[in-house]
Image (tube, rainbow, N blue to C red):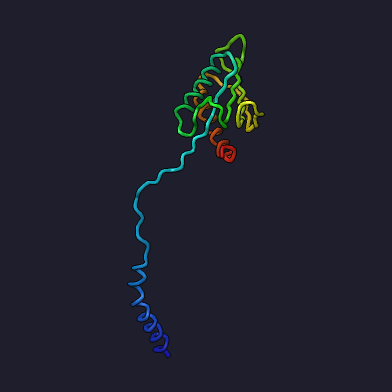
Amino acid sequence: MIMRPLGAALLAASLLLPALPAAAADAPKPVQDAPARAASRSTAISVEHEGTDSTGARLATRLKEQCNTSSLFTLTEKDTPKIYLIVTTRSEFAERPEVGSVYSLIWAYRQQKGQLAFLLAREVGTVNDGGIDNLVSRVLERTDGLSVKYEYLWK
C-alpha cells in the first residue's frame, strides 16, 4: 500500500521532467530597459489679471511665469480652445496696501472668441507677499487637475 502512492508520485515526476526544458524555452524574454516617450499633454492657457494692487500684480506675473516655463501648459493669446484663468485682486486694506490682497480666481473654458465661456471652477481668498509661491503652486496644480478632468473639451 505504501508503494502504490510512492510509485505514482515517481511516475508523475518522471513524466514531468522532460516537459521542464520545454517550459523554460517558452519563458518570456526580458524586455529592454529603454524608456518610451510619454504622450505630450500641454494645455493651452491664458492668464488675465484685473486689479491695481502690487501683491496681486506679483501673483499674476508669477502665474504667467510658471505657465510659460511649465511643460504642462502653453501660455498663449491665440484664438484656440483654452482655459482662461481670470485673476481679480484688490488690496485687503485700502489704507495699508502692503499688508496683503484679496483675490478671486475663475477657471473658464472657451472654444473660440465670441462664444460663451464655460465655468470650470472658482476660488476666493487672501494672500500676502510670503504666500504667493505656495498659492501659485496650488493654483497650477488645480489647473492641471481641471485640464485632465475636462480633457475631452480639447479633442
